[in-house]
Length: 444
Ligand code: FES
Ligand SMILES: [Fe+2]
Image 1 (cartoon, rainbow, N blue to C red):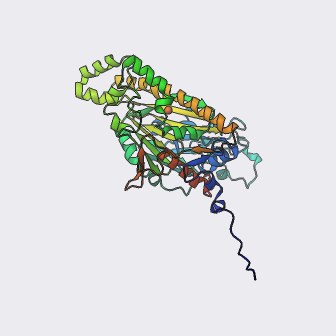
Image 2: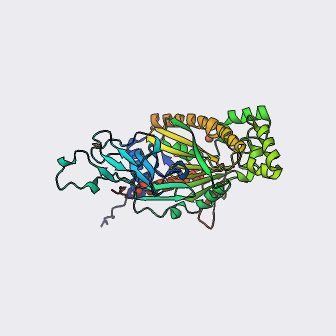
Image 3: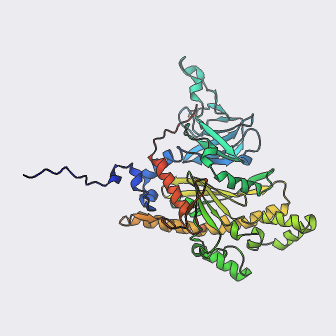
């Protein structure tokens, strides 16, 4: 007599998983469609840029009451305002009547915004103040239901202002986690009172925003992608400058994954003096001599060490990178294959003019020269991932399963400096956010 075998389960367990689990694998492989699929990009704009904290601006960009600045957050046009009372608000730049963009200026100072279509007037807190020819609206018309939509959550840390469209998002400090130690270091490396942002440059590349986010946590590429800068510096000024402190993993530098998508490259262990390391720039000797004459050599050296790249890349997911010299960049996704990078430099109001002049010169290396090299690589990647669907996976496994990766008491994972530890970590957060049901919303 034959026995009937129970049906064997033929489908692997991962087919039960949420769809995004199949696209970001535990072995460090990430599917090409994360970079090429417009439908995934749309989901990211909701679940990532609408689901977690997103960097809006630096407080110093709105120094006075009624200052405002327009930004795009996951493509949504937003007016970030400082009210009469000094409070920061993030308003949807979309008229509550028929949807017109309300403010067309990039930044400025205004108590009110008037829509150019039918003249409705809004305060810089978002409140609808005036409806033109209002007698045409019936008794049931509720003016308070027609304010500009605004972000339900805004919090800031050490001058960096974040907003979220997810009212249930965790407190900002919890989300930043152990990265605050590095932000504190970066900010106090400056003469904190009087730090002020000045816009330095904007770059556009035709590739996915995550390629930039990955790259800022990638030291592996530096001797190859930026070879021309390294070579030029070496030939003109000799060794010991710019990028030649990295030629492999035999170095105390490291990468780190903090959780919540945040990652770090720390070059400080190999850069005892950012001033000594920095590429010579026009005016270097004159500025240094002027500072020494005025402040003495010890204080002059402290000032000079504020001018170069201080050696950290701290990437706060999804759209901010802070570097140790106080400058920072913001990634603005435009389409699945188009991204804008805004690079900002910080000047110190209370520092000698020589310090600020040198800080600006050094920004010409990075983001200036350096990002051009990277952008070229991003566009090559975008092209290949789009046009060769037969090759499905992108490999972020470097460091995985080796004894180079160590988990610390705070849960952060440290890897050797060329490892993809931080980048891979960010993709685990991507997967977590994309699998979540979130409902971005605005307050009226
Ligand atoms: S669309 Fe703004 S007032 Fe009509
Ligand atoms: Fe680079």
